[in-house]
Length: 226
Image (cartoon, rainbow, N blue to C red; front, side, top):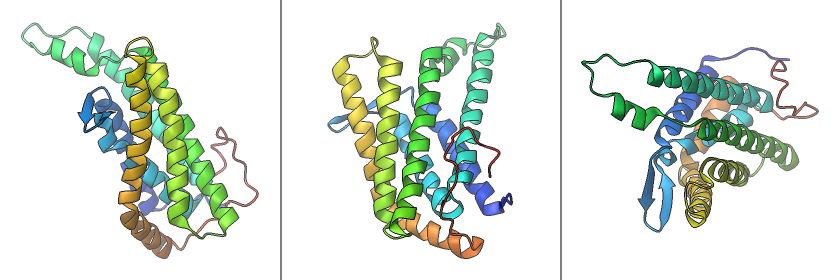
C-alpha cells in the first residue's frame, strides 16, 4: 500500500480545495446566461470534477477519497469561521457590516445542502471513473471523464438545489438550475478535455503511476486506506 504523496498530487489537492472553496462563495449569486439560469460558482466548480478525474486516473480511488474529504473539511471549516466572523460585533467606525452579512450570511440549510451534495456528487464521479477504467482496461478516457462528470454533476444538482432553495425559489427556477448546472458543467468538461488529457499524460509520465482499482474498498469512510 503506497502512502507516499508527491508534490504534484499535493498541488492538485490544493487547487481542488481552493476552487471548491471559491465556488461555494460565488454560489450565492444567481445569474442569467442566455436561456439558462446558473450560479456564479459555475466558473470554478467544474474544475473540481476535472481534477477528481485526473486523480482517479493517475493515483486511483483511494487518493481521490482522501482529496474529497479534504475538500469537505476545508468547506466545513470555512463555513464555521465565516459564521463566527458574521456574528462578531463590528467596530462602530466600520460601516461594512450590512454588506458583509449580505455576502457571507449563508443559512445552515444551504450549508448542509452544499456539503451533502458535494460529497454525494464527488464520490459518484470518482466511483464511476474508477469502475469504468477497470472495465475498459484503461481505454476511452474521454468517455469515462464525460460519463462520470455528468453523473456526479447530476447527483450534486439534484440534491443541492431542491434541498437549498425549495420553498424559496419557484419550482420552475429550481428545475432550470438543476438542468442548466448539470449540462453546462458537463459541456465545460468536454471543452477542456484536451487540456485534461494532456495533464493526465504528463502526470502519468512524471509520477510513473497508472492505478487500476482492482479489489479495493469503495467505502467512502475508509479514509485510512490510502
